[in-house]
Length: 185
Image 1 (cartoon, rainbow, N blue to C red):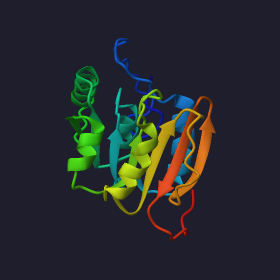
Image 2: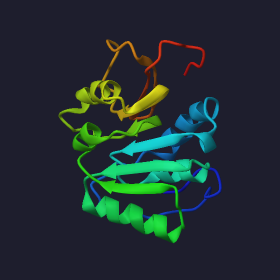
Image 3: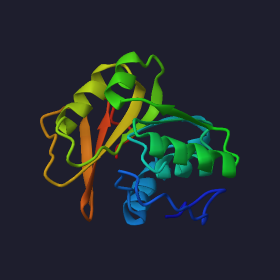
């Protein structure tokens, strides 16, 4: 795995094989950041990485200058690995929290500009995640929630859904809280 762009761009990292993760591919990350680059100044936003796994997306945001990043995962191995890389790369902008994502969202009082969730595709409650994130005041007004799923999940009934993109076996669903569409995906 590697960091695609920014001050850490090109750095490779090698998560342990035994982590129960499904890392977002470089192809999918490149597509995602092509969209985000046109809509955000990364130095002026906050980012919440749910189901962080290897920390790949948190590293990408840190590499692009995001100063407030919270990475949440319940797996002790994943959290230990992210903390190890944060220390090795001397990243001060990433706060790592070991927690069940649903419990974290229920207790969280901080709002973020971008929330990304890359849950296990087999997670039985995956279809509930958009409603939970969008209804619990975790996003700042105008904030974006991006959910990575397999192609079988659709959220067309949710008015906050702005678009979805297909990157191989990964679908990214883009949600926004505001009805103001001046910045579209």
